[in-house]
Image (cartoon, rainbow, N blue to C red; front, side, top):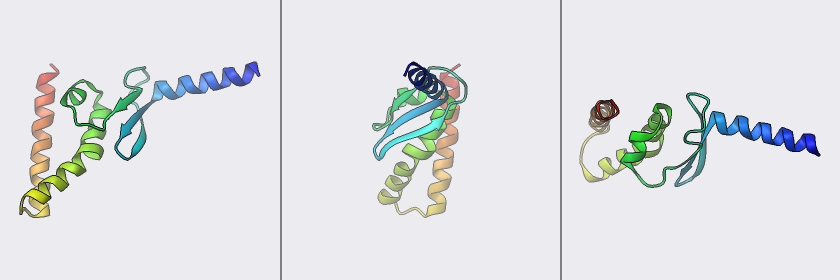
Length: 108
C-alpha cells in the first residue's frame, strides 16, 4: 500500500509540474507547460480577464487567445458587422499583432 501511495504522489507531482489545467465554459482542458514549474497549475478562463493574459506564461496566453477567446470574438464580430470572413480574419490578425505588441511593452 505504501508503494502505491508513493507512486500516486510521484505521478501527481509529475503532472502538476508539467501541465496546465484550464477551466473553460465547456469543461476542462489540459495543455503542456513551457517549463517545469508550479506556476498556473489551475487556471479559470471562463471570464475574459486582461490581467490573466498579462500575467500568464506565453504558452498559456497563446492558448487563451487562439482557443478560448478567439472563436467567441470572431463570432461576435461576425454577428455585429457585415464584414466578410476574410476581412474579419484580417482584423483579428491586426488585433493579435497589436495585443502582442501591447503585452510585450507592458511586460518590460
